[in-house]
Length: 105
Image (tube, rainbow, N blue to C red; front, side, top):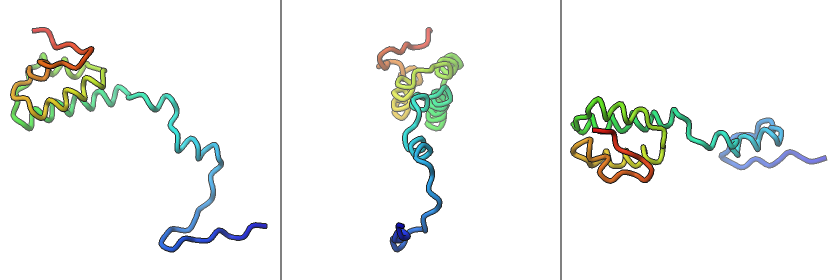
């Protein structure tokens, strides 16, 4: 019979041990969990608009609508980086991320 495990000073006492299947699922996300959700894309678009607003950069309804309907997370994160430095919202699209397109004028 095994004795009690030694407690390391400064740590909480060990609780009940989870079954291996639960521990593995807690550590490794399922394949579905690795893909960004549409909520993530929506959050990126909201962040872009918020950054531009806080910096005093005017955003047309057309650009607002364009950003909020995008689902390409890579393009949105690139535009979020650009939102920190542009002086005109149209400048977000002058050096577009690959595979993205600017709103029609």
